Length: 428
Image (cartoon, rainbow, N blue to C red):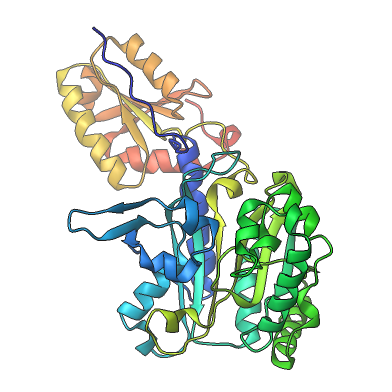
C-alpha cells in the first residue's frame, strides 16, 4: 500500500527555487542598506515566555487574544512562538544589558514569525519579517533617519509607487484626554462596532481605529482625531520629523487616524503602503515606543522601530523566471576522466565558479544532453585524449563553438569567456 502523502500545515508555505534566491537577495539588500546606517544584526529565539508578548503587545490586541501560538512546556511554563520581533529585541536588550553600551544602539533582524490568523493573499500563519530598532534617543531626527533607511531599502529594490503615512500618537501627558473623548464617541456608536471593539471601548478604544471590520471602519470615519490633543512637546517633535523628511525630498501623507496595532507605541507612527496590494495595503509600519524598555525592567530608554512583511514585499519585487544556471558543466568520458573531473570540480568551485557535473554514467552524447539541460554556459569535456594531453575541451553551449586548453588554463579561460560579450569571444 502506498504511504499517504503528508502536506504542509495550513497557512505555511514552501519557499522553492528560484523564489528562494530572490528571498536571499532581498535579505542581502537589507543588510547592505541598514549597515550603511550603522545597524547591527541581532538574532533571538523563535519562542519566548508568553509574558514577553502579553505585557508588551497588550492583552486586548487581536494578537494576544486569539492569534498567538502558545503552549505549555514540560516544566509547566507557558511559551509562545514569536508573533512579532520588537518585544523580543527589547527583552534581549534588557536581559543582556545592551543599554550599557555607549551611544545610540541600532539593531536589525529578519526571520519567521507566527500568528494563528486566517490565511489570505500575502498573509500566512508562518510569515517572515525584516525589522530595525533604535534605542537611546528621543531626537526626532532618529525617527526621520529610521524612515529614510526603510525608504532607501525600498529604493534599492526598485520598488516604486509607495506612500508614506505619518501620524503622532501623543504621549502619556496628552493621550489620556484623547482616549476619553474617543471612548465617549465610540460608546455613541456602540451598536455599529464589532464584538471585539465593543468589548475594548473602555479598556483600549484605540483598537477601533485599527479594526479591519467594515462596520467599524464606517463607524469611526468621523471619529475625533488625536492632532487636536497633542501637547506642545509632541507637536514640536512631530513637526520636526515632517520637516526633516521634507528637506530630504520625501513626500508625506498625514493620517490622523493612523494607529499601530500594538499597545507600546507613542508619538511617531508611520506606515508605508502600496496601491498594488489591494485592501491590505501596508508594506511596512512602525513607530516610537519610549516606555517599553522600562516595562521590561530596564532603565528609561526611548526607542523607535519598524517591521515589514517579506511575503507582501516580494509581491512588489520582480522575481527571476529561472534558477541560476551553472557556469560550467563538467563532462567525463572514461574512468580516469571521472577522477580528473571530480578534482577539477572542486578546484573550480574554490575559484568561485558555479559548477555541475554528470552523474550516473552514459556515453558522450547522453552526457552532453545533460549539460544542455543544466542551462550551463560552457561544457568542459575530458576524455582519454585529453587525459593524455593534460588538456580539456571547452564548448560554448550557446554558440556551439569549442576550443582545447590545458588543464591549468581552464579557470582563466572560463573567467575571460564568462566576462566577455558573446559576440566578442574567439571562435576556434
